[in-house]
Image (cartoon, rainbow, N blue to C red; front, top):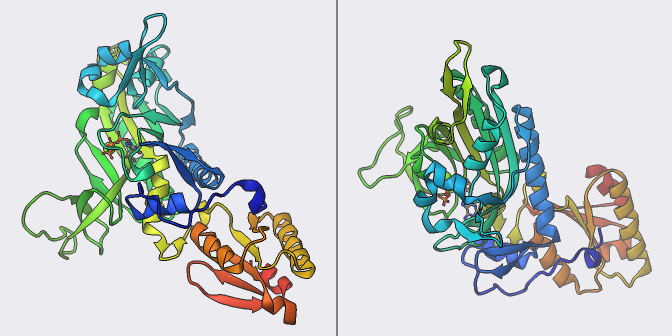
Length: 410
Ligand code: ATP
Ligand code: MG
């Protein structure tokens, strides 16, 4: 991809509305733009990262035995009245009626819709278990949308739902999701703690939140850096780790995922029953498992940045390499840039070529800001000695070599 073709509107100054490091960097690096408070546009670079995060989530969900479907964002509010949550969820849900006078809402989550779906064709224990997920846009009229994608009114969630005949089945699916979540966070380059938590408006008994440490995080946990164990912080005395005795540390975190054992709350309310092998009708036993897909991106940035910009973990970087020909009007430099670009592309390495006729300083600043892991600089040394420079964005390590040597290194 060429810089001038892809549309990367980087910003020199810190936008006024940006209230966290990740929000500032996402706006400055040309990943997102605000449409209105709490509602964002994904620009091409941001969308590339989002697509990579989604691909990781899909791989791990499929590997855990879940099947993908896509539920509607427009939902029948009558279902929410029947589940009792129309009241509980309050003003967070966006409601309206259409020209036929139907009661509609924009889905803030999908327990009702998916339970109603499963009810329509599960009648016997032979139809269970079921594990279904989607990656989809959710709508929540948050009281205070802020921190960019961290708390939006429209955001992307991966939500998965399990349906079992008994507690043992639920336990198995819950464990599979717990493990898949760990793999997803690791692959996205996130440090996290799994914290046993309150189930809130979802109902049910057991739940774990996946909490990523970040200075701007609003949820405080007590974490043992040694064992990786953590629990929600409640006012009170200093505590120590039950496993190793080390002092627990108060840590600000962002919730990136949440898994719940729902039990029969929704199946009872919406009459999703099946006939078990003993011929008795029983409500289906459910679990639900969410990841804030679009929240994950700024959370990764909160944990991976320096004074000059973003430091993308390799699995979710928008491009792996950026080529910086420092003078595109010099024929030799420009043709070497194109040669390297074609060679990298041929090897399946995602590469961006900064083909702008801009000063070197502008190119360096933008390359650092966008956080692409490797930079190939074609400048003075190329003129004199045919050498290019390879810079590792994270470690700042630079090596100079022939174009061929740099290709081998990558
Ligand atoms: P929070 O406590 O942050 O408001 P929640 O507990 O209401 O979140 P869940 O219903 O558990 O959220 O949704 C699953 C996941 O969706 C959350 O773990 C979070 O990562 C993400 N999420 C929730 N609300 C938002 C939002 N307004 N903007 C972006 N992501 C969100
Ligand atoms: Mg939650």
